[in-house]
Amino acid sequence: MSYLRAIRQPGLRWIVTAALLASLAGLVLSQIGAADAAGSATAGAATAGAATSHGGSKPTVVLVHGAWADSGSWDQVVARLQRQGYTVIAFPTPLRSLPDDSAYLAAFLSSVPGPIVLVGHSYGGAVITNAATGNPNVKALVYVDAFLPDQGETIVQLIGTPPGSCVAGDPTQIFDLRPIPGAPPGVVDAYVQQSLFPSCFANDLPAKQAAVLAATQRPASTVILGQLSGPPAWADIPSWALVGTVDRVILPATQLFMAERAGAQIVKVKASHLSMISQPAAVTRLIVAAARATR
Image 1 (cartoon, rainbow, N blue to C red):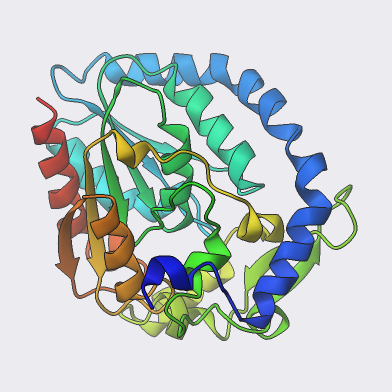
Image 2: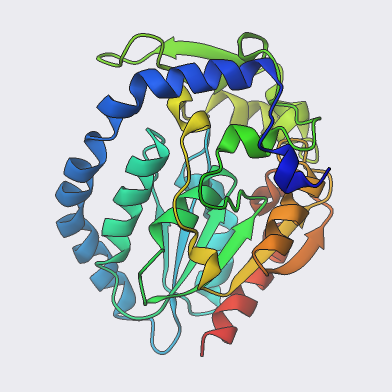
């Protein structure tokens, strides 16, 4: 059975949990993104305008982090790109829902003048796939250990095909679930259990560094898992993908399937799910290659 057919028949217990949570929260959370995006557009325009004033002919690089992370996860990549003269913006994703996070990023991107190289890590790959659709300024998409969903697919379907991801299984054994004030019943924030985080997410990083990352993670709403992705930007925008060959979160086979389907230029690196931290030079090289291809 091909991956594409297999993802239509997920069988893991947490998929049922995610689907139920998504159905409870969908109507409420879908109304949040429009207001948030509109309110942030003005501030985003000022930030982006100031940054691009020194960018010259090079595109602006916008970096989008994944779930359980923040913009600081890109620090080493940002520094390397800046040394090469690129204007870089590390975008702060709210991690509230896929439609709302994508709308928030799309509004921000509409305020950035000139060509853009849009980079997504992990869940951030799903966000850029939705946010870049229809934006002519986005000249390249770069996926770093990331999801490249097709229309109608969900994160939870992709993470379970093939089986073996360290975040697939009983969610109560993988995540610490915390309440979200005002959320519909059953919708909660998830944190990866700190005892699991090093071996799951950071299996090529020193133990002390992994422990800090586990303690400083940001929560992601469980509604994200079961929400349908929209028309994929990678269908029209050239794409690049870095595949971490020792990634235990999004298995290398899953990453390769998605990247090949999208027609992405693929680079394999011996790295965990956090390759932008453990292999920042390799990640930077791929982003620069994509940026140079836009000229």
